[in-house]
Image 1 (tube, one colour):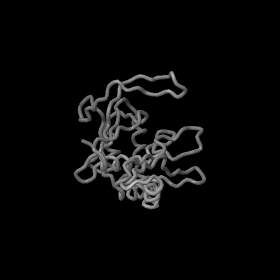
Image 2: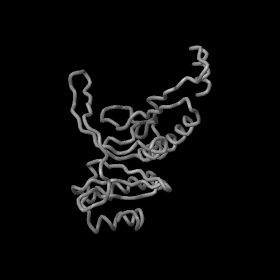
Image 3: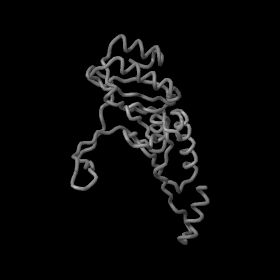
Image 4: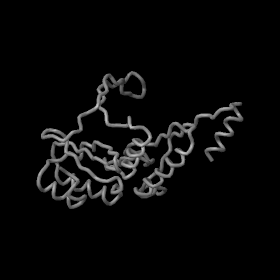
Length: 211
């Protein structure tokens, strides 16, 4: 389908070279929407869609719709559920984005909200890279292989973190061979590091997941 569209565009616009195609607002809804798929299927569909788009050099952009499911909005294709739960597709997207461009990293953006227009927008003033190293006052870092990012494991991870509430933000280090992607989890999942939390995490993800 993509090659056919590109050929048609060249014909219509009398172009000899390839015509760039941006794929935007692509997504798959998840349950409980009647037409939605389960979380893991959404992740699998995302992998397939990215793999297809990556075959063609004239497809330089692929935009997933949307990031976060909003309460009251019937469309539920977000990578983050209404309650802040990170769906498996969230981790899939983070890993794939890094593969295509390692500049897709966590950044700190300082700015202001511009409300002069009908739709508010964020105007960035300063962008910097955070220190993601583990320290006494730093984030609580949990490591896990990308392959473990499946629905039941992600759901259980959220349950563990929610059962140890605290002030320390949680960073999830996703390991895929020699490549590592770090994701900062929602503030609702902040924890209080304790022997009990370490025990629960090691039971779920193995002894190497922390420390």
